[in-house]
Amino acid sequence: MKRRSFVKSALASGAAAAIIPAAAMAADTDNPPAHSTDYYELRTYTLKNETQQKLVEDYFQYAAIPALNRIGIRHVGVFTELKPEGQTKIFVLTTYNGLAHLSHIADNIGKDAEWKKQGAAYLNAPASAPAYERIESSLMKAFKHSPLLVAPPKTARIFELRQYQSASEAAGKKKIEMFNDQGEIDIFKRLGFKPVFWGETIIGPLRPNLTYMVTFDDLAAKDAHWKAFVDDAQWKKISAVPEYADALLVNKITSTLLVPTAYSQI
Image 1: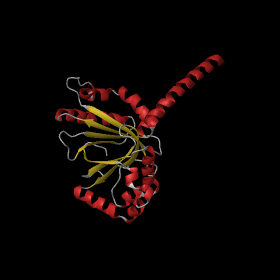
Image 2: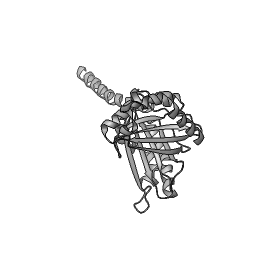
Image 3: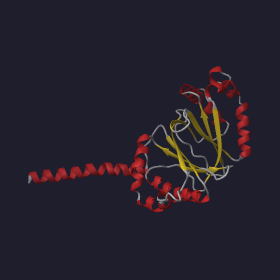
Image 4: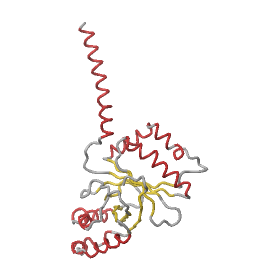
């Protein structure tokens, strides 16, 4: 009897040991653990025509975003260009709790039967009729002074995605220092730019670079905010320091104006 009790107890303990991690994983899906620093994946889809645009948009609206939400992603932003030259590109911003979270998503999204069903047209598009021409991806780590994404109000807005390229890694780090430690991010917040994220690109093209996203009610508000920034006394003080001169730290600035799709979560 003692041996039977021991075996029964051991089996129960083993089952519990298997169930507890699974239960914890399920709990993490609904309530991702607290974290201190976001990581961002920015995808840029190059498209040939409206047919491809519809395939990509349908994929994110009906397949990818619901599946990502089911396994712990809270914010997926999908944007088109405000003033495209030809066929618009599609920009997709996905927020992760960390590198382990990114790995978990990559390992598990393929197990989602509904994702496969709803995304079949995109996932299985033939080579003769691809869903897109190319995807360019970057992985970014949030700045220490703005470590978590801030989703703006769900109102009619335009977004500005800005990238600062530097001639060297040292110059890129110095520019990030200017944002973090010299108060440049605080100026943006004080002036009402409603920044969404700030990230240093750790994997991706055109490195070294940093990328950030700010929002405005409309084009007139954008112009007014940037004028206020240029005229700001604190900004003039920071930018007047010789070691922070743009000529030393930044050799190219790219600005892209975006509008969110109706289903975007940012």
